[in-house]
Length: 52
Image 1 (spheres, rainbow, N blue to C red):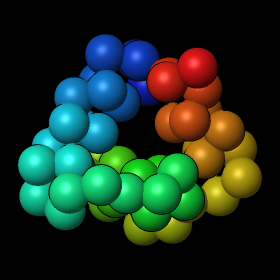
Image 2 (image 1 turned 90 degrees about the horizontal axis):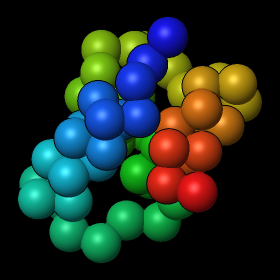
Image 3 (image 1 turned 90 degrees about the vertical axis):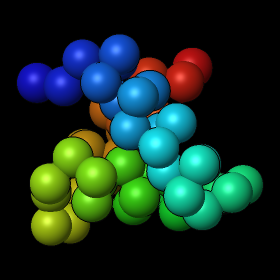
Image 4 (image 1 turned 180 degrees about the horizontal axis):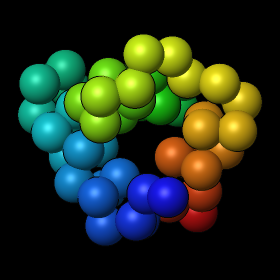
């Protein structure tokens, strides 16, 4: 279970490190920052829902 706050904090770091990212690239960057090895469809949906 990931909190939306934690996801948004990782997204902020990803943008600072990489600049503008597509949704797929953002999901992959957040995944890596949070310590996951791959971005499956369920994890990707959770990550992107934090911005909806």
